[in-house]
Image (cartoon, rainbow, N blue to C red):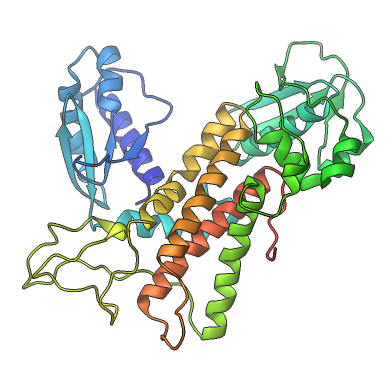
Length: 391
């Protein structure tokens, strides 16, 4: 069960409680589920009971109890606890079940991971000035909302600049609309599309226009072309290319990605009381068995946790970017994924070194690296930017 699955499960429980008249409150459009913070209980937590307390005119603890009995019976949910003033804390059936479900979802959905139908009821009409940043932003916003199921039409105040086509921009209509439409109005770039294309090319130009928030001025200098860590676009695309190279390297060594076997305690052992849950295992508790990899280590260390969490959060980031008409949120997410990927890659090499033979640990690490590469490619695609296999 992924965080998105758990969010839908909780939302369904709210809807059932309302339908059964156990709860009288408006059903929210969505429910936010987050990874439990250090020191907290369970794998994930949700504050929906506190959110509904006012409209339902009931204490949050009472609402949490109503929802707990409906969520606890769902497949994949091992335990539901009520903590603090009314938080729901969820423990999944197996310590790494959520991480496995996330990686499975990425593998199954590919570049469409994070796409959904949350905006399927919306018919949107965007309107922008004849200005390159507004045009590129409207085009990226179109991609984001379509990926969430919306239907979209984009218009421009005047005839399009012919150079916009080289940036991948399309416009459905021109002229002043008869009724007010949703305006896309970022701070103007101050240059034309032709000038940007000549200096930067389409990919760097789009990144430079989309990475800053709409109310910030876009930095469109030569730093966007630097082939080094100081350039976020290069770092994101290099992380993707490196992930793809790992897959090719593994194929040459005769192995492919696979799940990390559950490293929990055996039937005659003590529990892993001193070990973090899931793929973030970093310590071995005395008396507990080692993970079944044929080696004296778990497949990941703590560096995997940020990357796993960012991949799990990716659908929520895409939806927020669509709702807020903010492609910059997606760009920042990709930067964070790239940073976490390199930390993980350096700490837990997916490929064996020297004469070392590929193990289950390497297959598990490769699965996580491939998922990161897929998320990076999918996010860049939504921004209209290529994700090269080689850099």
